[in-house]
Length: 99
Image (cartoon, rainbow, N blue to C red; front, side, top):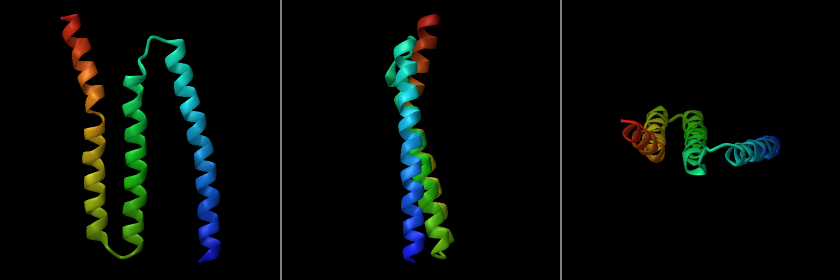
């Protein structure tokens, strides 16, 4: 059990560095182009929601609760859609301005 926890902590530390690298890339992208950070922020949020929901569902499956895992996946998908609504609104506003 202790070995599994230490392995998990090592993986999370590695994932944290990858996420910091991705965030710095997105910051460079917003500085060098006309893209607004408000358009890229929902993408990061959807990524975080999907990873969290996936990990939670996998934990539920490992614990033997397939029904709860399905519910977590469904709620994660709904939360992803909810978080991406500002991006959808921005796209619709751009389309309206073109018409």
